[in-house]
Image 1: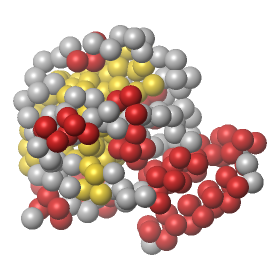
Image 2 (image 1 turned 135 degrees about the vertical axis):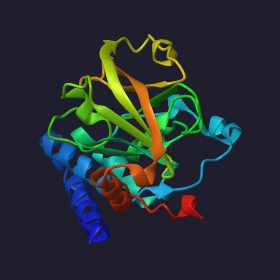
Image 3 (image 1 turned 90 degrees about the vertical axis):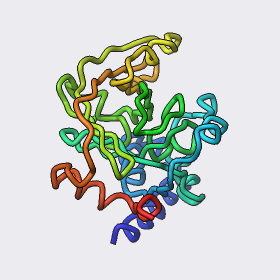
Amino acid sequence: MKKILYLILIIISIFLTVFSIPLLFPQLSLLFQSAIINYHNPKIVRESPLPKATKKCNWESVKLLSLNSIIVSSIRDSPEYVGAILIPSLNMNVPLANYTDNGTYTFGAGMLEPHYINSNSHLVIGAHNLGSKSCSALFTPLAFHSLTGRKVIITDFKIAKEYKIESNQVISPSDVEKPFKGSSDSISLITCTSNNKKRILINAKLIKKLPVSKLDHYVQNAIQQKYQINAVDN
């Protein structure tokens, strides 16, 4: 059923693009972008060695999303993701790659500096903000809700790491070092402001590690429904 809905969204979106509807109704375009991203079936693989992930990492290749670029990406092979990042209270459930490039950013989040998900490292994770409160895809909800105290979960589908958001702030795009200033028991999430002129930086501190099987049932169901995790189970 999910695949059928996904194909229907793609077909309708192609029709809209052919007739330049997104230019006339940008909000409608954003809703279709969000829906396609949320219905996309992410490809899950084992974490590759860090040198390989480092070679793939290309922040400068990341471009702004559009309905046309998402349609084109949906026809190609899915980017490879190794985990997920969830904020249950915001219904955020985003596939996670341990590197950043334009492909991974189209349908998920990426580490700006490659690390293993379960390593004792400060992780800096970025994703797009579609710029509309009506959209739920990627890191868009981070721009439209209060965040302090919310729980963030990062998982490689075997071990989960739970964090608590301690602060968030708006920074300049030129302040490139600030997100990387954190301890080994913390993460930084980063996305654009809705006008794309500044960046939203969220800092969270590690609370605990636990097996995925020990997460509450709501979170386990969200993971099982979105991801095919046979690749990491074998």
